[in-house]
Length: 141
Image (cartoon, rainbow, N blue to C red; front, side, top):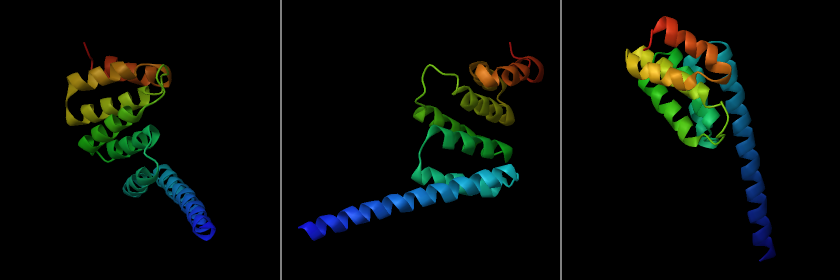
């Protein structure tokens, strides 16, 4: 029994190491591709990263990448998934997800919904940019 337990423990450690390596690989490559404006590659790496780390921030990055490629429906889906996983209630960190939703709906030509999303985004670091979209670009009521 001791040999079997040792093998299981070693396999668990190896699995954890492999997961850390995958997270590092996909995360670094996704960030590099995004920095280089290589959005198709960034999309590929962020989608792989989601398989290992399903977190709100990863879906936010996917929403950004989809918006840059004008894949509006995919951006909406990613941002909504990010909101589902959002765990920092009481903070303004969800504003970035609402901002990406606003951008996606604006891209689709759905002004009313874009305005709603930008109004939700008008907090914290996104307040100025969201208010600009609301007041000057979309002229929301």
